[in-house]
Amino acid sequence: FSYRRDVVKSIVRKAGALQEYRARRDRVKANDAEGLFQLGLFCEAHGMPVPAGQEFARAVAANPDHAAALHYSGVVLYQSGDNAAAVERIRRAIAIDPTPAEPWANLAPVLEALGRAGAAVHALHEAARRAPRDPQILGNLAASQLGLGLLADAEHSARGSVAIDPTFA
Image 1 (cartoon, rainbow, N blue to C red):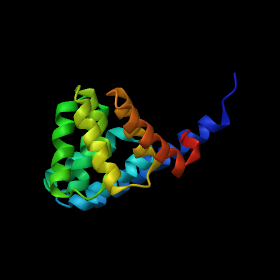
Image 2 (cartoon, rainbow, N blue to C red; image 1 turned 135 degrees about the vertical axis):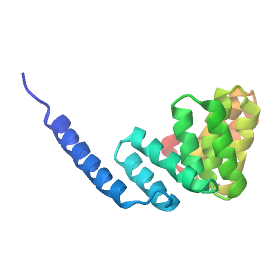
Image 3 (cartoon, rainbow, N blue to C red; image 1 turned 180 degrees about the vertical axis):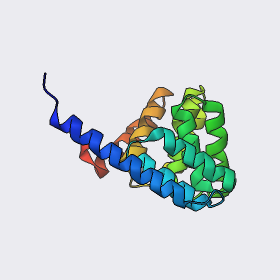
């Protein structure tokens, strides 16, 4: 029986990240929404989704108007299957700060999961308006448009995506 070296290295990295998370967590005050949000991002970047979600939720509790924490908290809720709560969180984030494309783009799959494909296309249009050179957003828009039978629109969006990044072909 032999161990895979890459798996062992991954476990060691994860253990180190967990120790670093705990040290950082101990330094962040419960009312420091930005610090808690950054801690959530650290967890997310190091493959720790459960503590990431907890830190995003703590950031929202510390500041219910922290748009980025609301957005990321909504994404975690979607990933856990709570689509209704996810829509509410992401929409609150957008109401506070409608300028970033990412919340609009992340709202779309939640709406699709709730059977609201037309609203998902609208959200992706808003994302594409904010990030017109993002091939992933344009590709997702094309797929959503295709799902609604909007063939000409889907073709236009897909061509835009491929023009930016040919690997999306």
